[in-house]
Image 1 (cartoon, rainbow, N blue to C red):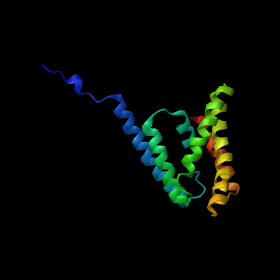
Image 2: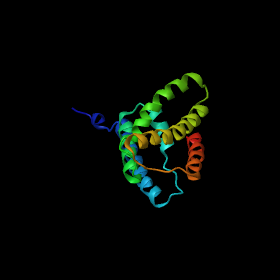
Image 3: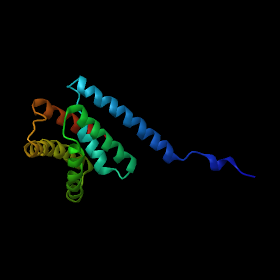
Image 4: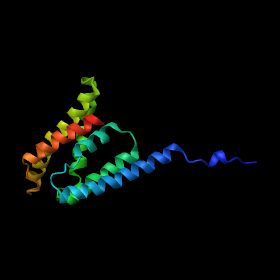
Length: 152
């Protein structure tokens, strides 16, 4: 006689459902950042999660989030995810140098926010485009995201 215990849903499925729900909330939030420019885009937090997570579903969702961000803000396609991938190698070096997890989190967000405009500037020069201008809001986003990532 077969028992019902083999029919239980695994905790891995529950975790994927939660990850999917958070992804859809983040897409909704990203849409709101276009309407309300005082909201930070949370790219630093997305980079921290991308660099520190080994879950393939999370990486796919962050890839889709960055594509949505680029389409929403008129940035070159794959530029954000490409910068995530390049900076992940810096993250591997930071883990060996820094011992404090809080310092690693803060330095990851700060590194992303310092590297990303330089990377976009380079892409603008290569493709002869003008995609984004940086102002004081950008540094406000950096400070807000450093505070948020330190709370994670």
